[in-house]
Amino acid sequence: DSQLNPDYSFANFIEGDCNRLARSAGVAVSENPGGTAFNPLVLYGDSGLGKTHLAQAIGIKTKELYQDKTVLYVSANKFQTQFTEAIRNNNKNDFLHFYQMIDVLIIDDIQELAGKEKTQNTFFHIFNHLHQSGKQLILTSDKAPIELKGMENRLLSRFKWGLSADLQNPDYETRVRILHQKAYKDGIVLDNEVIEYIASHVTNNVRELEGALISLLAQSTLNKKELNLELAVTIIDRLVKNTKRELSIDYIQKVVCDHFSLPIDVLQVKTRKREIVQARQIAMYFSKTLTKASLASIGSQIGKKDHATVLHACKTVNNLIDTDRGFKTQIDEIDKKLKM
Ligand code: ADP
Ligand code: MG
Picture 1 (spheres, helix red, strand yellow):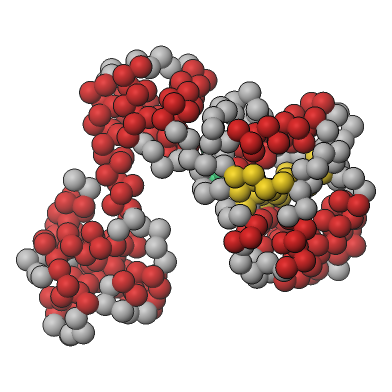
Picture 2 (cartoon, rainbow, N blue to C red):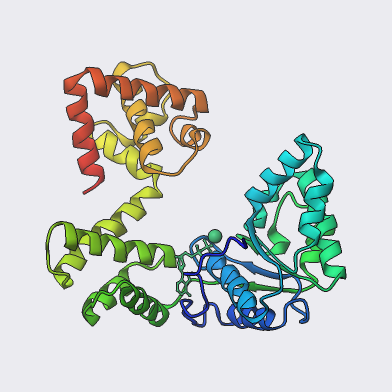
């Protein structure tokens, strides 16, 4: 089992200026695995821009063209877990042997091996063995190899042996074509004006573009509403606001302070005044629930507190929500303001 998802094919991968080099290198590699100068082929770029899709497309195509070749797709995390287990079970040789038998090895999100010296060391040996035997390596990373931190230099220098190709954010025209294709695949007919509205407002990455289409579809099915421009405007505006808000702990602090008629910077002040302590806890709670920020990062942005303080704040707020009706009403009101 090569762990490949058939949806992630070349046929489903829309070509644009943003991915042309990476895509054509991928096609070349799948037509002649191990036989091009693109070894390893490193695909890099921000999250949601198609690294996993493209890496898998290469695997799928190779399997189609060369039925007898062993293709394996594995995330760096899974590789790491397998390695740890092999060590624990005294099976390191089996692990090595397994990976050295592969013809086309695809490792996704290689940046996850940062700081994992033993795994990197083993991967180094696998890399050398495969490369010397003319086998193909395909790696993806959220950063260019030169910017990867916590990786052994001898590995990084090998990443540069082949080709590093980046995936960029698609331009408007490509976004339109991606949306057409996704809608078509889902069997939905969308007016051009709807597609154009989405393409001009959801601009961060392809994953969000897909997410927008799914939300729109879900809303129209669940609420039995026509999938027209009006619905698109409502849904998309809400989504776009949500993703913007998601980035900003500042914004959460502002809304919380507004709500309690406190000056915005008061949460940074070192004080035990009850109303300020509570406002700070609420801001921490919303930062934890509405952003992806870590406890430590929330703490450092809200009053220079440590992660334990933030954790305590979240617990306190959760408790009060369960036990204090008046408090819960306040939280609901702030939540509504944040989602406006
Ligand atoms: P990454 O691994 O870079 O985070 P993914 O490969 O998971 O990104 O892509 C996110 C989503 O966007 C996937 O569902 C993928 O199918 C889709 N996608 C990305 N690029 C394209 C493209 N060029 N054409 C069609 N779909 C794409
Ligand atoms: Mg990915």
